[in-house]
Amino acid sequence: MMNKINKLFSILLLAPTLALAAGDHIKLDRAPINEEDMVSLQSGARHFVNYCLNCHSAGYMRYNRLQDIGLSEKQILDNLVFTSAKVGDLMKIAMDPKEAKSWFGAAPPDLSVIARSRASADGSGADWLYTYLRGFYRDAERPTGWNNTVYANVGMPHALWELQGEQVLDEYKVQGEGFMKSEMVLKLDKPGKLTAIEYDRMVADLVNYMVYMAEPVRNERKTIGMYVLIALFLLFFLVYALKKEYWKDVH
Image 1 (cartoon, helix red, strand yellow):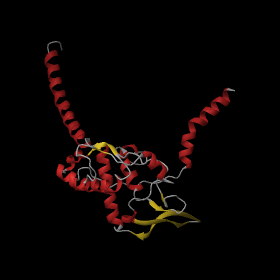
Image 2 (cartoon, one colour):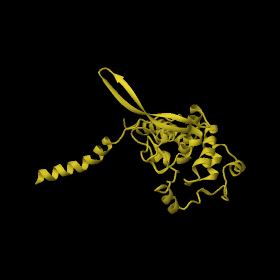
Image 3 (tube, helix red, strand yellow):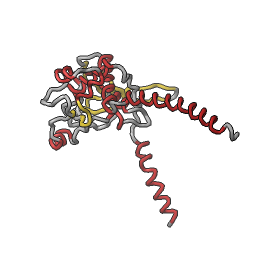
Image 4 (cartoon, one colour):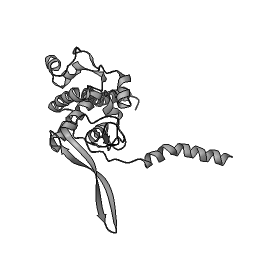
């Protein structure tokens, strides 16, 4: 009886691992981002507002935080706020979650911290987003007509298809010594408004901004951390000198 219980317990523990091993493993591309590149962050903020903020909210991010990436309050209001929202308001949308669920099958998630929540052992959240936004392809079997190599059977349509164009999955045969295997690779079927290099750069800017949005004080936190470490390092010598002075008569 105990052996059966132990066997069942082992199966339950291994079930998530087996399920993961059975799924398709997608190698994530490295996202070429730079959180200190203000031009890239500003470009990414513009793309986010134009293409993402229609369906997805960023309910933990305020418009005025964009001043941290070099934008003035007037620039934010004139170029990035297309509703009656004020510069100090949160980046919310008017879409009803219930209606969104009926349209897409699930309500579009809030994107405030998506760059942090998608981090995994295979890569950072930035890598996941960068690969995901470049991995859409045409699939007639899906309700939206789109699928994704990173997120299989995704409910989201390809919002950037006019820029990237339309990709399809194409079978690619690899000849080896004594064997031949087939791989499915993405192939551009219909070009978009941007070249492949321009689209990748645009996506990199968008992901760069989403990484910043997930933790706007990240760079400031790093700077403060360095100052704290320097202060502790100097304090160590002062404390050590004080200790030697205090115990010199004892030793």
